[in-house]
Amino acid sequence: MKQSLRFTGIALALLLITLSAAYVRAEKTAGAGQVVPGIPVKDTVTLVELGSTSCIPCKMMAPIMDEVKAEYKGRVEVIFIDVWDRANADKAKKFKIMAIPTQVFYDRQGKEAFRHTGFFDKASIKIKLDEILAK
Image (tube, rainbow, N blue to C red; front, side):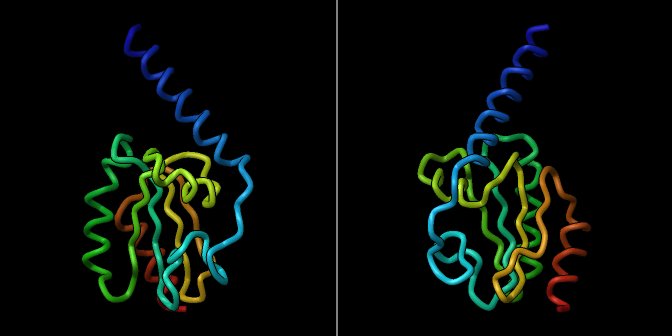
């Protein structure tokens, strides 16, 4: 019972945090097509992982993202933003996420090509990246 209440409390807190971010208007972008300065990386396929070092599914994603970053080095920029870190609060709001983890894929032109919310397995990430790289 205590564990169920704790889970419910954590889930409710996460929901409130992510929903509040959805209602905040995005400020002016840093540059043409950029959500925040340097993201997406100019002329490069970019994968942004929005999560937290404290979130269980995000922790499960960390080694996958490290492997993807290594395997696609030189072809894809992989960026992690800890949305629960107060220093990143403005960045997180600009991505208009509803829950974490969220993965946002950008093509070479800086356009959002795909967005996924929740745990995303490595094989599926690679399929999506290869699809975007092929364009």
